[in-house]
Image 1 (tube, rainbow, N blue to C red):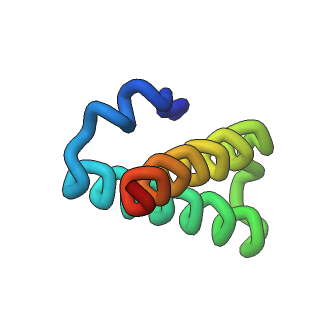
Image 2: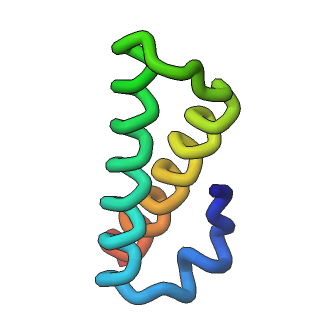
Length: 66
């Protein structure tokens, strides 16, 4: 689930918070299933989630600094 910067900037702060929470929960579930020996998840999926989380945090910090 790739999230683009333009889409993030168009979101309200509440929408960003919800999206960030959803992405973090999804990442947690994928990591925990891998750690418990469940079905192996595609590593690119985890990488993509981490990058999407970083994008949202970057936009949030830019908005906070202004």
